[in-house]
Image 1 (cartoon, rainbow, N blue to C red):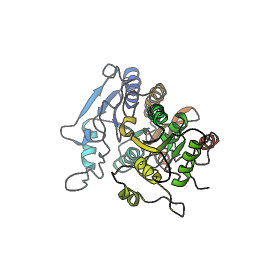
Image 2 (tube, rainbow, N blue to C red):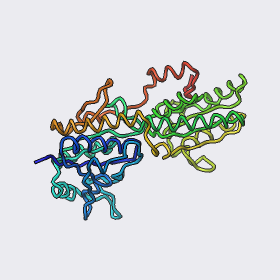
Image 3 (tube, rainbow, N blue to C red):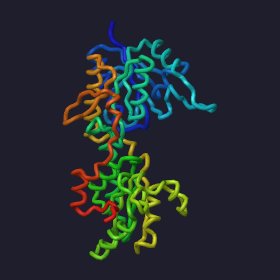
Image 4 (cartoon, rainbow, N blue to C red):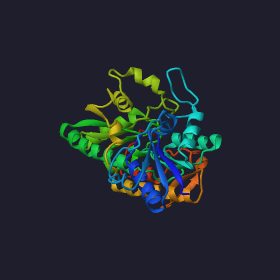
Length: 362
């Protein structure tokens, strides 16, 4: 009897999800003869009545390599241990166990970020359902893997936006703020800012001093460059006197028209710089569209590696890229440490060496 494995996507969408599914199906079903069952909307498809599952074949997965989003659908609310409802969180563990048994699944392949991987670990340890993890986050904030698919695509989108804002900023002598994703980790902001020639990059890891940012803008103007580009990660906040970040709920009420990190940063510079200022928020544009070639390849490698882990019965592990090679690591170890920007690392040193300002106090 062949193997029968379920595959699902959880959390936010990311370019490359479909490429993982395609690779897993082409290898698992097409070459090894497995039954691969696609589960809709994370764990929800197994818990719902009627169940929402699909038999996946190489034919049904044709044309997915370049396609953004996920053909299975996704949600960041499908936690069987605390399922959201109008009456409060519900325990739906029994529904999940029954769904897995009814579909005859040997185990589940969970493609998702740290939240989805944490749920998958609980599903395995507490419910006895074998799980293999595949890391997915455009924020590149999982420490166990050198890169996650979707990150390079998000950086590409943000860099293109910076290139476009550059021409407008230069034409109108404006200070342009671009807000990118990165609530806790500023990898997208750092990489896109460096690739797009940003003058200032504001990160969640470094509470910024508006006066240092303003000084950078003034120095540029004095050198005959009366415009500036400032990249702001969504989690970046100004610093208090002790150097810690001002709580978000203390700075946002001061905004005249509301807004996020870019609007906050722009408001902090009012009265400090003599220039017209505008801000743009990329938001979910960073998640959408086709994955760049790098992410298509990485996602394909991850999908094949997930098949390898299942074939070797290495349940409880997550696929990862380490030192150029794809392998596995225990899920518990994978989610134990969050990857933040190393403020003393080589990327930061490079950025500082070419004059990028991070708003650090001297």
